[in-house]
Image 1: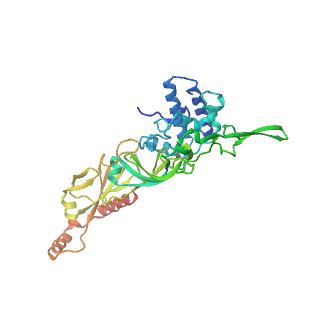
Image 2: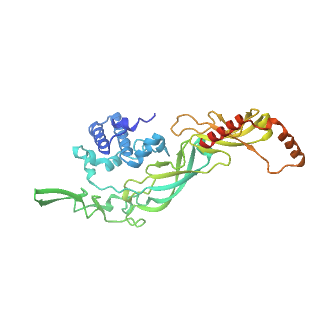
Image 3: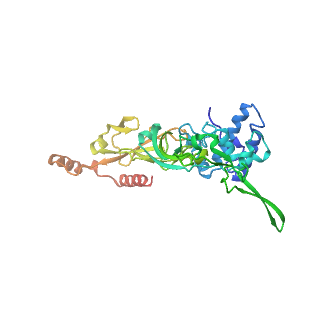
Length: 384
């Protein structure tokens, strides 16, 4: 099923401010909160959908890519914009990352209280992927071997020995809340403030028996092969995001994202101009004079093209639909064949005689009007 527009999901305009987007998500999150709609699968899906929309629109970088490329900017490896709605993250991950937005409304199940705890976030990774023109035309699936921090398999990323709950103890300073409350006196009277617990760093718990393989960090250096689906029509300079495939987070937090920068290898024959392709056809003078059937390359192979007699240099022949697909699915571009005359650098004696005979003919001496037309065509070619 096609995803809905993120702005439509949150009920905001495309010019909405960050504060308006946050307020809209807060309203949706409270409306469809699982604790408010127990057993309602439709409400749960809408809750996840709103979380995905907010994950993208609340991030300036993700929002800019979404505004430019739509959902295609995030369609990689099955991951959505933020990985929530596609199943890349659990409900607990959503509460951990966005719980502070609706945690104060006192929903049960322990989820609201988790908003006060600090959640570790893995760092993003950036890799460059270079594509050929043929790969751009059809889209491609790439397998990338990425060196990064991965979850420690001995403790399952928890940092505790053998990954058992007995390896933890509740922080005595914050009593598991992840924050401490203090009262300060000011000119306005007594004021209450909350700060991250200095003892546990906001985790609410302390590891007493550290995993010896990762020294209690929950992550180790390693490699992962990641499959990335790159959409057809993508351009050099565009950036894709695979949610949750960056560096793993310490002690079971939220993984970072893998950001993929697209580069493109220049083709030997075809020059890219957005969705269109340009081919320079170097036509022998006799073919330009008499007309000919020639072969020109396209993405799908060679095609025959009829050249009319008297074709002038600089003329552009358009082959509809022989260009590249639009990354957002808005049709295909064209192949523009620009005619240039091939002038040999050396001639045999017999060829020279033929050319001398041609020179004497009035047919090969342009009139003033023909000269003006030629210069006008050249001007259009250089300005295009």
